[in-house]
Image 1 (tube, helix red, strand yellow):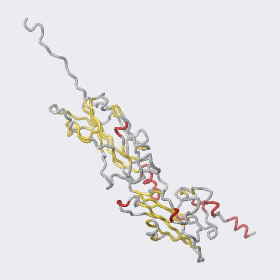
Image 2 (spheres, helix red, strand yellow; image 1 turned 180 degrees about the vertical axis):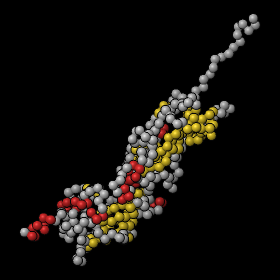
Image 3 (tube, rainbow, N blue to C red; image 1 turned 90 degrees about the vertical axis):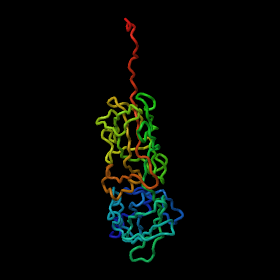
Image 4 (cartoon, rainbow, N blue to C red; image 1 turned 120 degrees about the vertical axis):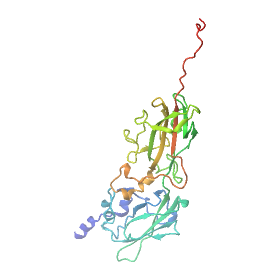
Length: 350
């Protein structure tokens, strides 16, 4: 009876358990069966360069019968939760493909934290993780188990058009008189290209969407130089309470890191019928400040712990892959109002 009680107390049900579900807590299973050959590994898992991510391996049920997977089956399970009752030792290595594996120090059980420092010119980069289990007081190590990671660059967001200088204002993507079709701007005119050079554009791949974008939206009025018809850009004054506003994801507050635009497609700023403010020439200015994407937010997993509000994630601005356009403007000009025609009165000679 004592033996039977011990058997029922065992919580590590081994292949039966890890074969029955794809998820344990926040973690997804890599494959239905372990990858024991590097050639079998796929590299669909993505990690932002320089970020540290946790990984763990299911220990042998034979040598770790009291491993309690239930403690790992919670959100943000700790290293202690995952290593609970694990008696085997584990040697972790990682590197380029299989040739460049290097030991990961400081982790000797079934849990590890790994980061990859990769030169930007080499991104995206595939990396292999190898782990070998050796039971306590036994000299027969298990076959290696492998997993593949693709290290990608920080996300990058830019306007599709940098605009041109029009009527004395730089970075203009649309301009015209109030009420004309030129400034009844369609959504496509304010499309933002969302990509980081390594992931597919938003909507075309897995893991990028949605992008979280922090931006500023400012409305200015400007004086017009009567001699040239151009706007005096230096005279611009911000409108305190503009008629048209742009709000973050909550729909009520200004855009910020804590209240970003949540973009699930490349159309970020929808079209408006842009109008005059205060009966003066008006400039609508959009500036992208910083942003993050699905994989970069995932890569903040360890830093977030239980906090996961919008403002807690890392935000990015430019990277050295390109110099994207970050500001675009729309100019609305007042339609000239011409007075009546003057003539010589019929009674002029009387």
